[in-house]
Amino acid sequence: MDGPTEDATYTGAVQFWKKSSEPAELSEANIAASPPLGKGRPTPKRRDAEAANRRPLVGAAQNKTPEAKAKARSARSEIREAMLRGEERYLPERDKGPERRFLRDTVDSRRNVGEILLPAMLIVLALSVIQQDWAKMASFVGAYSLILFAIIDNWLLWRRAKANFLEAFGHLPGKGSASYTVLRAFQMRGSRIPRPALKRGDPVHRR
Image 1: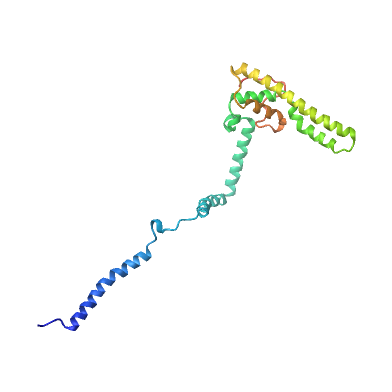
Image 2 (image 1 turned 120 degrees about the horizontal axis):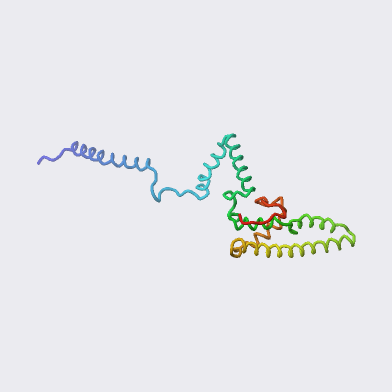
């Protein structure tokens, strides 16, 4: 019986090897070229992600032209001036509303001991460094007298503000109104924000 020759068997083996090896080589090349997906991709570190998020903002700030910077400064200056004048839409939430405006006017329409407390304390401090008995006594008596007068004056201020508020609005001031009034009374007149809208002695009305 005739069987296959040695050459035919060898040729078939060569053909079979070529056919099976080509797909394997292509698949390995594709896998190597493709990026890792899913869990195979490395997770970026938190600090790197935060730095990447901040980078565009820094770049945007550096790319501002001098004209844009000048315009931004002018806008901020206008907003601050409007806030100092007491324009409602530019005020922070704690200062908004007719009720807070009424309390500010009550403080600004009178002379308050609290507004001279800081300058007076500087004088008392200067006296305390003098190494003489009369200076030490004067600084001691002056400091405690000013504090006592300021407490009494602010108590009277709040009584007056509460009574006038009740008459103007028909109800007592809300929570936080007492501290809002007293803290403004302790500020020097020129440093108050918003600036005083009334002169000392002017009548206080709801507006």
